[in-house]
Amino acid sequence: MKVEQIYTGCLAQGAYYIESEGEVAVIDPLREVAPYIERAQKDGAKIKYVLETHFHADFVSGHIDLAKETGATIVYGPTASPAFNAYIAKDNEELTLGKLKIRVLHTPGHTMESSCFLLIDENGKETGLFSGDTLFIGDIGRPDLAQKVKAELTEELLAEHLFHSLRNKIMTLSDDIIVYPAHGAGSACGKNMSKETTDTLGHQKATNYALRPDMTMQEFKKELLTGLVAPPAYFPLNVLMNIQGYDSISDVLKRGQHALSPAAFEAAANETGALVLDTRAPEVFAKGFIPNAINIGIDGNFAPWVGAMIPDIKQQILVVAEPGREEEIVTRLARVGYDYCIGYLEGGFDAWQNAGQEVDMIQQVTVDELAEIMKGGNVHLLDVRKKSEYDAEHVVDAENAPLDFINDSMLQINKNNTYYVNCAGGYRSMIFNSTLRARGYNNLVDVAGGFKAIKESNKFKVTDYVCPSTML
Image (cartoon, rainbow, N blue to C red):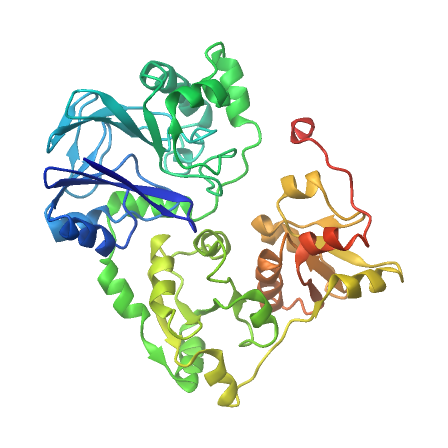
């Protein structure tokens, strides 16, 4: 028996590969399916099942392509109603995989079709729980996402379902079972996930706030629903793609990897209205970029921020990348449903610059330079971190303008004033600055190194830490 977690840090997502006697089950696969197929071929095995814990909101699953390419059966738990061929399992039904059994546990709450898969070894011992978004390490799945697709599925109703699912299906299992969740810290599918990506169920019973045995329904709902922020706008759109189907990843990759000369790139941008997405590092982007380009660096939390900043998943996109990384970028866009990349700048930004095309820049200051500027007084400092980060600690007199809600945050800005913009380390501030610069805000200055550098410099007055429990 083999159980392998395939973790993708950008999405904080865990897919799983289980093999026994030449038969494989893949749980919650990412959009690109080649790695799973290659893994099975290496084992001389055949993929029998693609098990989906629910209709995912934060990424487009590879279930359809994987089933088409391998002949595997897509399996959902009760109440799922996909627009493609799939097997809808009954609650407590057992699937055979080599010498193993996989029991389907219907656990509605995160969504109504949410299910967990309980792994039973060849000796009949229950050994692993693939918990999807029902149970995370340190947290549970938020119950407010399904409402974005079906209005009648209120967060209060789903919270009640989740309360019963946890107590009747999960907490009754043995303490030594290993929990394998679909997400870890950094995912927007929960609010308090641990950095650990597996744990024993017994430890979770002892430490996870949602598994306290003495909680009442009302206490559970209050703790679960307090502190939830609006999910990224692309979530319901990904849900629909996972339910209804999508273009093959091979077609998406072929369309997106269309090399364009600087002249052709400019013409395509002008003729199509495509968004120019520059994926280079923020500090590199600042020194020179194509006017009106948006910077979301490929080496940060790329896919989630693309989803947060580009509201239309059918938006046509033109990519500026470090040469050699184009396929990676198109793939990572497709993971969150952005299938309409129409090409990339051949030769990268250097080719654009060497062709004599127009170039823009974003001014940056070091924290030492900012400290000198602030001595003159009347300086506008914008902190674009999340409100929770800002509330915990920030420069005195800094104004919070979260990147997460940029359309609201931009209303705080007077175009005639100069603003110095910081985030935690410089990644989000460049997204903020480039987005607003494309909208005509030309007086934004980026603080290199962000709040981390500000605090380390000891040159700024910083608010005292406020315990998050006092901020509810």
